Length: 324
Image (cartoon, rainbow, N blue to C red):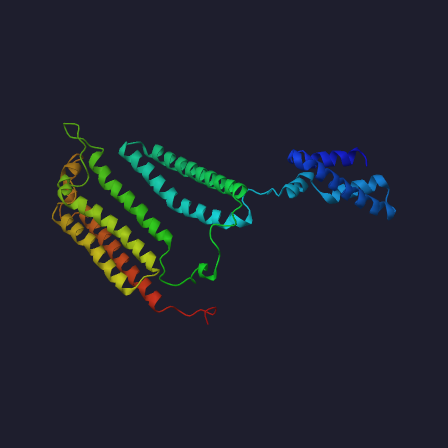
């Protein structure tokens, strides 16, 4: 054999443990010699035969990994699906919560809109990179140190349910939670920060400060209840008429007090509008009150009707060709 074979054997052995090199050296050289001799007997010149054999054997690094039983992938098929499911779950949960928390902090700190948007985008990118890196690192280490063949044995019971009308996805639960965090944060933020301040330097909130005695804590508790209710529906698997009826109650628990406070001039802070000479905007019959009332009623009706439509689709699914 020429130095070409020596170079090939050296490249294959250099990453292997010292105690294994002698045996693999003999085995590899013998395999190369046998393959070269077979080609020479077919009429190929020794030089060309050697080159053809080494080309057929392939990258010596890959060959060495086979001898050492060392994976040449970051996440192999045994753990790939567990890695992918966990990564998707963390991205769906952590990304919106982290971003909403950062945005809320920026709002409380009274940062400019451009700064808030830039910080939100930076947070999204940073959290995504960190989640991808650390989850992948943990799985790569597990595969190389424990030899795990997956975290759970697959059975037919693991199969997902067929898509069904009226089913609530986990994404909807996350959306409810993020909406509750943002709206709850805004309720608190408008109380501690404002574009207007009184003579003592205290912020003048958009909502009437008297609401803190009862109604704002009530709304915050209602937001938590909405998230819990969404989680219960998700755990059940789909909407039912019973859940739709409960949704009517929770919707009215928000809409009725909000409209009553609006029409009795207890919702909006007159001092806030007086700062720019428009305190008449919160009087009953004004454009502001009318538009706000229509928004509250519209959101409430949409939420109620949407829940009953989902319950109806779940109770009377339309047969599909596949189902038939």
